Length: 209
Image (cartoon, rainbow, N blue to C red; front, side):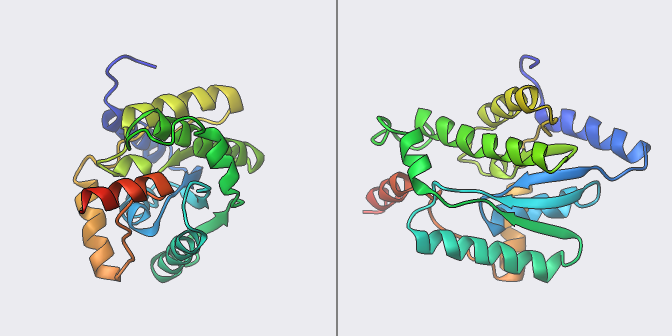
């Protein structure tokens, strides 16, 4: 990967090329929740035929997991019915706990998060290869709490391993995060107050005391 890559400029270049070629590639979009998906779908449905891939074994408890997947399904049916598909991965929280074993007490944004990114993006890459998608990417970079450099490095490495191009991105650019908040308000989307795992939930609760 190029040093100091401007992910938004790179994405703009890819989208311009797609537009010039007058085609609509298939994109597998890993997503963590409806709010983060809202702007990304608004943005990328202009260029791709999108399947949202909801794979998040990190989310705890299971009730929270179900609430988020139900909300993203509701949002897709409400706003993108017939144009965007939803594919749900398997929910095995133990896969997450094994992945971050030994890092449970690290802060959010630490190596624990890096390994979580790897877990979810690797499954997205595998699903993209099996589904013969032209690209895969994730909504995670829209969050100001997520490390876009890590996400793109992981995605590009997996692209080499699985043979499916990774769509580099930093969706918080161009006021993407702000727009996601606006869309969440417009459609009454459920916005959780922690990333998803039990460790981030505990950290958020401690910070609120």
